[in-house]
Image (tube, rainbow, N blue to C red; front, side):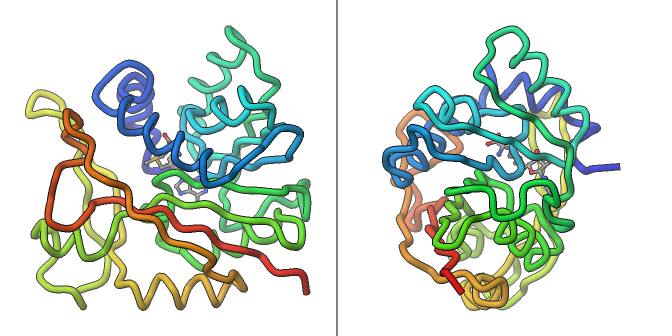
Length: 230
Ligand SMILES: C[S@@+](CC[C@H](N)C(=O)[O-])C[C@H]1O[C@@H](n2cnc3c(N)ncnc32)[C@H](O)[C@@H]1O
């Protein structure tokens, strides 16, 4: 069962009105800013969850396909789309298997807080790369590896591997897998999937959002990758 299915109802509610809303809105807006003018562009929201990024990009004129592996999160997304339509096509897919019906289709892809959750990182990157047009871009938000170390989540910088991330409160605690990787491993995976690293932007702390604390190392970074023409 996809990891987010058992927590989908909780995650969708938190994304829409709860504790994750400010965090996800902030990152989605920063990804949009990195994307530039998306009007008329074909955009893939890769690992869309309940469709936060998809709706923001669609509101700015993009034609959006949103893909996720979690059927239950997609139910939430489709229900929202039915109530407040933006013409977003929500597709159930494991990105590691690619999107066969959308090969070379997109100008841009965005994956908001998705790749840290993916065991088969190169597979997922390859699946997204296949869906992009030549010179298409992939925008990511990711946990900064140094922040994972300084926040004591791993035994040391080189201790890469699976971890568990815990959401919620002591009344409702939910766990999903998470994969810690060093900077070197991230960059190697980008290269293996034939992406070029174009820019990296640190996300500053957001006073008032416990998900973006004022720590010595910024918790989240945005990464812009280019799929070069062959
Ligand atoms: C932390 S959530 C982020 C959701 C969304 N991007 C947002 O901003 O709210 C990670 C999402 O990635 C999806 N995901 C993880 N691995 C995936 C895969 N291999 N293919 C498609 N979706 C995947 C999960 O189902 C989940 O919805």
